[in-house]
Length: 379
Ligand code: GLA
Image (tube, rainbow, N blue to C red; front, side):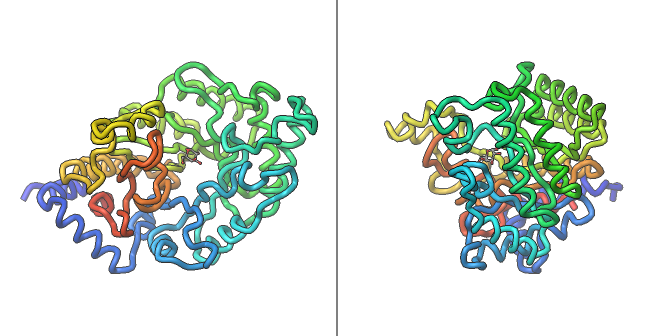
């Protein structure tokens, strides 16, 4: 028998066994009560994002699965500025408190998401009491006070923060035009990092974004990080959201970005991985999808179940990404999926509402999919 590397061997196993036995293997792994957290324990943390999902009751089949499979959790929406402070100073602590307590009780690395973003912000944030645009100093004061309160409440309990989300445009356009940059200027970002660090010096502070594989965006981000290093802005890693598809992005570009960030001595956290399997569509097509049966059929073709050949492509794509993460395991600190099972994914409603998508590792019945077994077989 020829000498095969571990990777070649597992590729051969997958090719030989096909989807059916991958599914069986996934169920066996789940039945053994070991999870992704154990499989990848020598490589990186395995995380997922939680919304409500039974946190109010303290238990649910989903929470049991999360406790078994994962060792890191991120809240989907409850800590974003809009939901957590809908009116100035009126904090909605109930669900975030439950989230953090549940994470602690189950030995999770708890991630906070997120402190500063241009989206999902409350309507009062950028205006004064007379609804006039707020000035620079007043907005800086709001930013700093928000961070002090939120990071301070969970000091020592939230281990990792997505401090700033999506501040950079694609290509070579540089800083995103948003109220943050328009009112404060790009320095809003370093202020956020400095205040978060002052408030909880032990927390790991991340910059989080999508499309880091984009060469122009990568170059700009690397420039910002080098400047931060020179001026000692406390940033401890970069989040790669990882909302990807079966045929995008180009993995070679994605790898270049991992290498570029790793080359600066910063770890990469994959923060929001999911793989869209549906035909590409834009938000503007969403009106059409319900308009005619034909467009519904072409944009939402797998309502009754994913055809085996697409399921195979999904499995193969998950394996490609995990192979890359394993190859760079020294620099990849965590891999988090955005949601746990297909039924709860935002990808059922974005960019087109009401479709049936299959982007995650567990199906609508919380059963592990072939993609799950495919990534487990890499070890
Ligand atoms: C972005 C945000 C997340 C979430 C996803 C979509 O990536 O960072 O908080 O809103 O979009 O659900």
